Length: 142
Image (cartoon, rainbow, N blue to C red):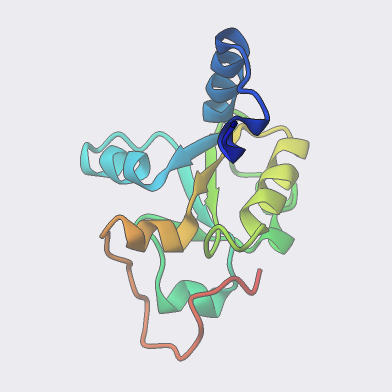
């Protein structure tokens, strides 16, 4: 009897290595962002792509707020094309970060998604920065 896990065979190791290695070129996680910040090795721009009210309610320290709909060549003109952007949204239930990554890549910038977003950040036990006591959801609105 075969389990549901083995019903579809795993990829050969060489293909799995390529797949999972490639994923790391597109993603980073909350722990790596936090550790980089703690070490003072922030060589990326962290972008919260949610709306301004959600950003004010709580965001990852060091992030700038640039909702996905505002990611344009004009808005990014001051950033060299070598700038690595790390984008995040509310969490795994939201594809705002993915949409923002598509826009940034189309504009010629290197980009990674911080998987987990705000939800992942909080799950790791990290604190959010709060701009003011806004009465808005932490969710997307991007």
